Length: 183
Image (tube, rainbow, N blue to C red; front, side, top):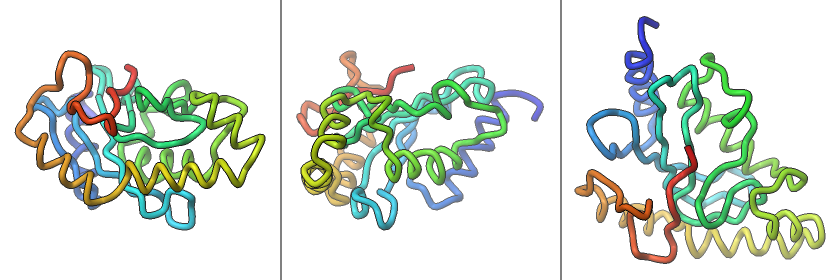
């Protein structure tokens, strides 16, 4: 690759060509939303999330910032901000990875194999370790309440004309949406 900006463009195009619905926030290709479906045969199957992605200037040498916009109940996702606690994105990122890896490998693995011993959501981690059936029920309730495909489509259409997010980091007054990912 000749430059980070060329790599950013290539990775974004590759993501779009992989059948992910990508919604640009601005024309700079640095921030966008991706529609992400819960993995098959998981508690999250059937759920659809809007993921906010921000690419730093030094991408791909520095990892993207990734966060769930609509709520998800998971030990490694902060319920209020949507920030993701995932080593491969936060600490062990490599320029060998790309955006497709995030959505086809890293996020599905996160949802399939939660790590309650390194929680971002202490309540979810505690419930998972203490009462697995109650944890699974709560995950399914959140999916039904906050991750319905119809709701995500409506949210995308409502916000598609907004080029910038509001100052508080959220793009909706609806309590079903949460803030942006941590940088």
